[in-house]
Image: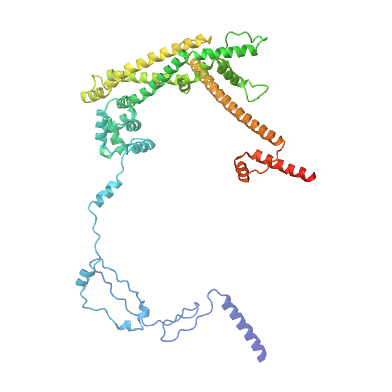
Length: 507
């Protein structure tokens, strides 16, 4: 009976424990101990632990000014409750006024004009010019250490100390176009708000025909160098024409060429020629000897000229200007003269109808006329002279080309004139090279002949019958002879003595 009750009681306790374990609320909390704080909440686990002694919060302090900090390490109130700190109190008679006076945080003094600078930074300049163009102008403008007004005045006065050739070329890239001038001058807002490029454009826009003004002055500053370069080219061609037309040696050399060509072409339709095209003489160096591949007809021509027309063999020395002229493009030279002539015409037009005209204000026109007019007058005379000299030069060379039966359409046939000059230069150069090569070959042959003769002498000496030295020959004289004698003779004599000894031994 007791055993059955125990079993039932055990099953009931197990069911009760299972409900407690799997219940959301859990088992009831233990009852709080008396005098140790509030009891635990039912169904929430064990009751709270008893709280220690609590310190009342200290009153807040509000200094009249921001104070410098004192960076101590503060303990928590709970840490102080059971320590000596719980019995310590703040000094009630602290001289707070003096503390504030001595340890108030210093006030940051605002920099004079700082606010204004911040406002200026915040103010953005108004840009009317495209970004890339704006950047390029700023870079170019930065090379001139002048104000906009000083730069403008220098362009009006055409000041040579400022407007050098390099400076003018840079200015031409940064001055405003007509469209840009229209854009900046039509701005009706505050000009001070515009960017640096726009301000410069406004300053120089007051100079009329600024581009033409700079172009004219650039031509003036570069005219002397350009003229001297073209003049030197014309003079080189004139000298070449005089050398070709006045050199009689060339025709006598051509007579030798004619004889060689007719002999080689004998019995063919190419033979019995009275003349040939001038560019044919350049083929002489391509016809090689069938016996000696190092020789060509140009070498043979040199031999014949030296043998029969020796006085004419140095004709190439009288064609030095022809060599210089062959390196110059005649067509480019003519183009350079035309460019200068076109520039002179633009100067005259700008003087009459542009920056130097009477319609301009005196402060604009007078500086322009002062700088431009003298050069324009001189350039007109000099360019006319160059054109006339070039025309005479072409006419003279055309006549010379025609005298050789070559076609030259007119005195302006630059192509055929250049071809003729190149032919004459190349022929003279080939002839000179062949003559030098012939001389080198002759020297080499002479050296080879001398070596062969010396070799033959040594061979003959070795082949002579040896002779025994006479009795009583002085040994010192024999030594001196051996020292001063030829190596081949010494060896031959030694061998001869050795043979004599052997023959005496066997006999």
